[in-house]
Image (tube, rainbow, N blue to C red):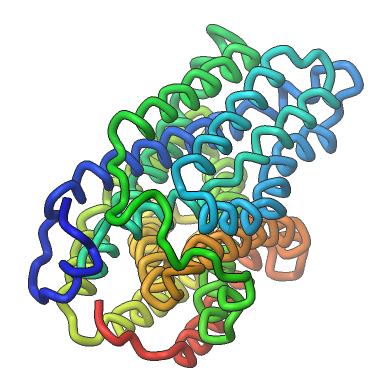
Length: 402
């Protein structure tokens, strides 16, 4: 396989080389499979949890949030372990915990047991190690494209989950869905060992013995703040958009997936153009700031078109264009800015900020929607947060080369 470190010195080589394509496809599959296991619970877990002994809407909501909380707490420890023990064994451990939590969920007979199962599922916090392994296996010049494919796999998993979850719940029940997620984790383990290449120079870099402190360097904080703001924008959007579709536009919840699928598909071509422009530009950070500006505009515009289906669909498509690009660009940029010896730790701090942002966006949705601005206040709130990110991004050190 081509050594990414050496190949990165050859400008203009923007195609996958050696085993890069296989690595990207396999890791995108692992990431997508794991996220499918997460997303597929969103449409069905609240009603199911409320029906269990001791269940209530509040506790069912806790069952959903327990996964993200465990992820946020354990991302950094898993990232540090991946720097010291190697990416593959740590990812395998995380997938094993996810499978175990899924089996516990299938056997759960009370809401408390479901909450415990979700905590165990979330304990497999391997977003950082998977992203770090992707960075280990790709050249900097094509890393944004590789991260974009990860982002597309996440988006595809989300859309598939919205469509499949109600159908599966009706046929095999939520315990059956838990069993499906356990099987998906097992399949991901097979892909990890049978398909993903070994990084050049061995499973873990010789220098990967550093402490966490370099991963908390001030130069990296703009990237962490960026993913926090971006994730908050996503969760806030999925708090507000379903309510707008249902309450303002009169669209039944069972038909919302059509809107999400349409806007996501519409966002793919412009996202690809942004990724290609970023790869080929001598000033990719300017394109990233332009993407943040587009995000701000889309969020602010969404607040004013909540009663207009066509307008809302257009602003959501623009939002997803900016989101998909920035979700790919941010970890690619961070993987270049962080020292290789703490790349896993840095990407796990990044993942922690990501899950905290998701929690914050959802948690602020209620208070903002109850404000004088109404549901539009949710979009305005995250638009302001994203605008703050735009100015914070200007303080990040300039990219020395992709």
